[in-house]
Every structure is written in structure tokens, then in C-alpha cells.
Figure (cartoon, rainbow, N blue to C red):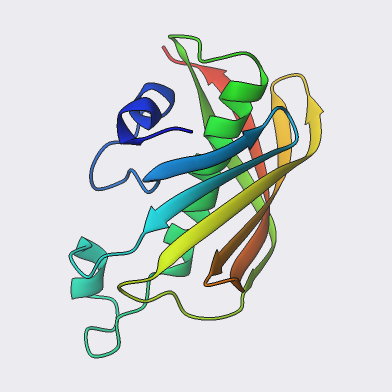
Length: 145
């Protein structure tokens, strides 16, 4: 549904912090599915267990939050020029298996609760149909100065 060029319209992130490659599906204000292709060329693999490279859990959470931001922008009717979503909290974070170079991280986000500018989302990240990480994500829409 959305390629890298479209994603750049929704997120202020740029290399090396843009962690979403594609959006596969958006189901209105219920669900979104995004993809992060994990390449050995990612700069974090140079220092994160070089002999057994593993994607840092905090970056998996950030990828889930970025897909969540695209979801929230879309669910509220599009992106406003001077507003962004910022991560305000992570709860019930669990890492189930390592994410390694060559993996394709499938990220599913569902809306748990929405109240004004505040959002609570459920994130699930999987590789080959096996759960790699999950988290409850809190985010807030803010205006850029």
C-alpha cells in the first residue's frame, strides 16, 4: 500500500533512523502492517555482537513505534504539516527471539485506545510467522515549533 517514498511523507525520520521499508496493509483505524528488511549493512550490526549480529531490541521497538505513527496519521485523516507523533512510553515489552541480518520483520499495530492527541497501540513484530517482539506503545501528537 505504501512504498518508501510515501512513508517519507508521513515520518520525519531519515537514514539511519528510518526503520520502515514498506506498508503492506492499512485497515482504517483498526490495524496496520509494515515491513522492515533487516540487512547486514545496517550500521548497528558493526557494534552489536559483531560475531553473532542481532538487531537491538530498542530498534525493534522504534520500528514498531514508526509504523504506529504512520497508522495514527492515517487514522486521523492524514498528516498535518507541523505535527508529528512522539513515543511517550513502552509497556509490557517482551523479546521472544533474535532478529538477525537477512530477516524480514513484519510489524502489526492495532489501536487499543485513542483519546485526543494520545494513543495506546499494541505492537507485534514477527519473522517468518514467529513472534520476535511485542509491546504496548504510547504516543502523543505534538506540534513542531
